[in-house]
Image (cartoon, rainbow, N blue to C red; front, side):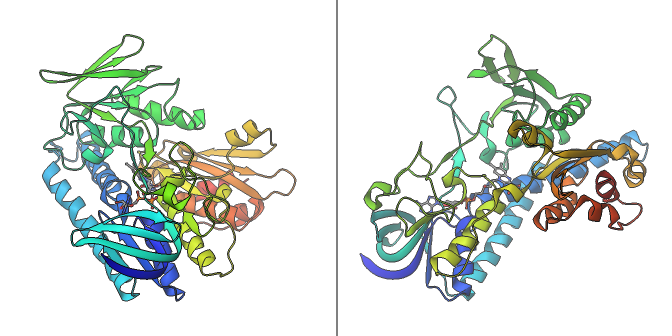
Amino acid sequence: MSDTRTHLLIIGGGPAGTQAATTAAMKGGRVTVIEKDIVGGAAHLWDCIPSKTMAASALRHTSVRNAVQLGLINDPGRVDVHVLSERITEITADINAKWINLLDSQQVDIIRGTGRFVGPNEAIVETADGDKRISFDKALISTGSAPRVPDWAEVDRERVLTSRDCYDLPEVPEHLVVIGSGVTGVEFAHIFESMGADVSLVVSRRQILPHRDPEVAAVLEEDFLERGVRLVIGARAGSIDLTADGVSVVCNDGRVISGSHALLAVGSVPLTDGLGLDAAGIETDHGYIPVDEYQRTSVPHIYAAGDVTGQMPLSSVASMQGRKIAHHALNLPVEPLDYSKVAEAIFTEPEIASVGLVDVAAAAEGRKVRTTKVPFASNARSVLQHFTRGFVKVTSDPATGVVLGGTIVGHRASELIGVLALAVQAQVSAQTLLETLMVHPSMTEAISDAAE
Ligand SMILES: Cc1cc2nc3c(=O)[nH]c(=O)nc-3n(C[C@H](O)[C@H](O)[C@H](O)COP(=O)(O)OP(=O)(O)OC[C@H]3O[C@@H](n4cnc5c(N)ncnc54)[C@H](O)[C@@H]3O)c2cc1C
């Protein structure tokens, strides 16, 4: 067994791990990353990049279908999933190569293999060439998460799928039954419907996106219903039977939804099994690793970041945590991450994006806020582009006028939200937002209008 020593050892090279590695290396730290699959992590291999690549194709295909309705073309054609799958592989490989080059250029040591702790300052990596022992001063656990598979379901990757199986299907499913109507469920319902599949969405509560603003969910529900997506409201799936030509999803209230494929989109589980956390003395909570405001675990020189912590499961958050950890581990000044200012988006069409304190959350906290709203139907650019669905809502402090947050539902909301994210971060007043001269005609005008 070969032995090495490093200052910062990182187990898991996803957004949290790679960002921590590059920042620490830039600041002069000696860094080692252990990664068992690809540098870039699940985010690049299965989550953000492939799903948004599919969403981009889905959006274009929807435009083509709309072109038929507008009399521009006669035939929308069919989606070639093989070409799409190749595109995903190429994009992933390209991003992966860029990250490896960056880390190599910074002399970050990348070890391919599976890491585990054998003590509070020692880990072992199982590699194709045998085991390596690594001593470290500080460590970061950024091993991420995987889709949750409930005990009543068995994934065969052909008929019963998780999000990880959606990128190389031999054809667009004829009828996809999506189980779960959170972010992943609605994104894939949108993607596959756009590509021509019949879609049924099993919604366990009274609305899709159960933890979100009902007004937001209503816009997407209306859109789904118009597109022929079947919403099976208030139904909790309890089993999946394989049939001669597909699947039958049986709900606990007796409803049965038949389709060609079932997609499980019922959350994720942290990847901490086999990591030797006991050997390092690290505490867990239901498999997740609790951390303090500087991402330190119960063993202060070992940090955790990203999905494995159970904090906001977003690539952007994982990266920012990684950046902050690099500073903290090198004893450089750093402020804890402010989770009240994180911008996030759901890549349906219309897209849904929010940042900061939104009105429903304020109401739940019993906090008084001023909320103003402008529908895109009254925005010139939206009307002329024929993207009138959705709205902008801005939340501000009634005493100071400072923008606290907002929600945008609409075409390219994931881009538009940047204006509000900056306003929240810089504590801009609604008046300043209102007086900002946006381009005319543009959808950003709806944001300044909503600040009135
Ligand atoms: C379908 C889907 C779409 C998503 N889309 C978005 C999006 O558009 N925007 C967004 O912000 N977020 C999105 N997310 C969430 C995002 O993917 C995660 O929050 C993000 O990947 C978390 O990053 P991470 O660094 O914690 O870990 P991961 O990206 O999960 O990476 C962890 C890495 O650790 C490695 N690893 C695990 N165990 C070991 C071990 N013992 N030894 C060595 N290596 C190990 C794994 O191989 C993996 O490469 C999406 C999630 C899903 C499921």
